[in-house]
Amino acid sequence: MTAGSVPREDWREEFVPYFFGEGPRRLYACHHLPAVVAAPAKAILICNATGHEYERTHRTLRQLALQLARSGHHVLRFDYRGTGDSAGKYAHSGPAEWRQDVTTAIEECERISGHRQICVIGLRLGATLAAQVAAVRQDVESLVLYAPVADGKSLLGEWEHAQAEYEHKHGRTTRHGMSDEVLGFALSDTFRAELTALALPEPNPALRRVLILAEQAAEKGARQMAQALASRGASVSIEPVDAPAIWRREPFEAIVPFKLLRRIVAWMKEG
Amino acid sequence: MVKEEALMLGPHRSLVGIYTAAASSSSSRGADVVVVLLNAGLIHHVGPHRLHVRLSRALAARGISALRVDLSGIGDSSVRPDGLPAQELAVREPREIMDELTRRGHQNFVLFGICSGARQALKAAVGDPRVKGLVLVNPAVLVDAPELTSQAATQYYLRRSLWSPRAWVNLFTGRVNYQGLFRSLAGMIRRLGRGGNHAHDKPALIDMIRRELEPLVAQGTRLLIVLSDRDAQFIKLLDGGVRALQNDGQPQIQLYPKADHLFTSLKEKAELVEQVCRWIESLQCASSETDARMPRRVLPAD
Image (tube, rainbow over all chains, first blue to last red; front, side, top):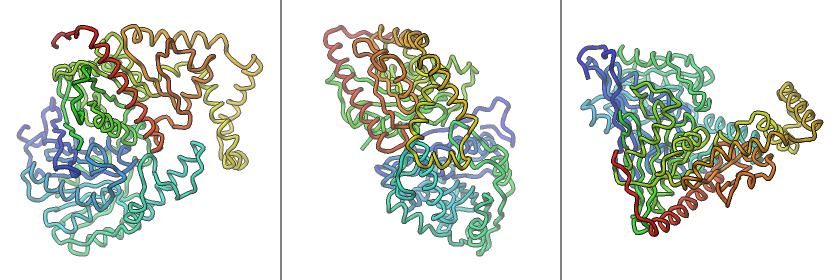
C-alpha cells in the first residue's frame, strides 16, 4: 500500500482468498486490499447475483473489486451459502439464508477493514438482498444497486423462460414453468415461493446515499425501490444501465462493462 | 463436514485454488491421488454450474483430495507478471500447481478438464509421469477436423429438429437461419453424392488422435474421455466408432449424447460426477496395487 491518491505504476493487486464462519455457514470470500492510503477510503461489500447469473457476472464483479481497491478502498467479495465455493448445496438455500449471509459478511467486512460504516454493492437479486439487509442496520451508509430485482415474480418468469429456451434448444420437452431447475441450478417450491414474495426494502434513516443502476425494462420497479429508500431522507439517484446485460450473456463472451464500473468507482469518490 | 482451504499458488502466488481435503485418510491404500480441476474455458474454478465444487466434494467424501484452480487471468487469479504467452502457460501452470502439491507431500495426480481445460490437461500431462490419470470432458483435440465436425453437427441438429414440432413451426414462420440450413443440407447432399462418407479422412483422423494419446498411454497415464452433445455425435461418425480409438480398452470412452457440452442438467451432472468418482477410485486402487509391487519412486524436490 502506498500513500497518496494514485497507486504506483507497477502496482499489483493484493488480495486474500479465505473462508470465514463455521459449519454450514462457512463462506468463501476475497478481501481486496487498498492500493493507496487515500481519504476518504471506504469499506465496500459486494453481493453477487445468484444461480446461473452468478457465474456469468463473476468476472465483472471481480474487476469492480479490483478497480475499487485500486482507488483506495477495502473490498470484500463473498459467496452466499450454497453458491460458489461456500458451504452447502444450492437446493438447500434461498433468499432467507442469503440475507443472513449478507449480515454476516457486513460484519466480516467491518472486522477486516476496521471501518464502522460500510457501503454495499449488489447485483440483480444480490442488490435486492443488500437493500433489504441495509434497511434494518445502522452501519450501512450507502448502497449501489446494479440492476436490482424489484419484482421476484418477473425474475422467476425470466428464469423459467430461459430454462424453456434451453430445453427447446436441446430437444427436451418439460412444460413451461414446470421444470425444477434453471440452467443447472435447482428451483424448489420453497425457492419459488420466496422469490414470489420478495418485498421491497424498508426505508432506513441510517442510509445516506443510494445509486440505482436500472435496466430500461425494469425502470418502474427501480423507481418503486427508489421511492421506498428515499422516504426517510436517503439521497437516491437512478441511472440507466448503459451496458450489455451481462447476466444474460454466456461467461465465454467475457464481457466486462468497464464504463459502468468506472461510474461506480467515481460515485464512491463523490460521497 | 468437508474441509476446504483457499490457497495462493504458483511462483508469483497469483493463482487461486480451493483445496478440498479427503474426508478420511486413505493412506492405507498407498498411492493417493489428488485431482486437479482446471478451468473450463473462462469459467472460474467453481466450474460450469458449480460442477467443480460438486465433484471436489464428492471425491473428498470418497477419500480423494481435490484442488480446483484458476489459471492466470481467469476467475479469482491475477494476471501473471512475467507476461508469458498463453500457449506456454497452458502447460506450465498445471505443472507448477503439481509442483506445489508435490512439496506438500502429494505424488500422484489426476488432471480433470472440460473443453479447453481438457486440452490443457492433456498437454500438461505429456512427459510428466506424476500424472496417473486424465479425465477429458469434450476435449477440443477430438474435434479438430472441420469437415467431419460440420457433418456431425448437421446430423445432430437434423435428427433433433426432425421430431420437434416447434422446429417445424419455426421453419415455416421464418424463425430459422435459412442460409445456414441450406448450406448444411447442400453439404449433406454433396457428401451423399460422394458415397456418403469420407473414408479417406477418417483413418487419418483416427491416426492423428491416436498419435496425440500415444505418449500418455506409453507413460502409463490412464485416460477417461467423456463426450457429450456434438462431440459424442462426432465420435460415432468414425469408422468403428469408439473402438477405433481404443487399444486394449484404453482410453476409456464414455458417451453422453443427451447431455450438453457443459453438462448443465442436474441429472446428467450427477451422472458425470458419479462416473468420474468411480473411475478415479478404480484408478487409485489399480495404482496402489502397482505401487505394492514396485519400489516407490522418489521425485526430485522442486
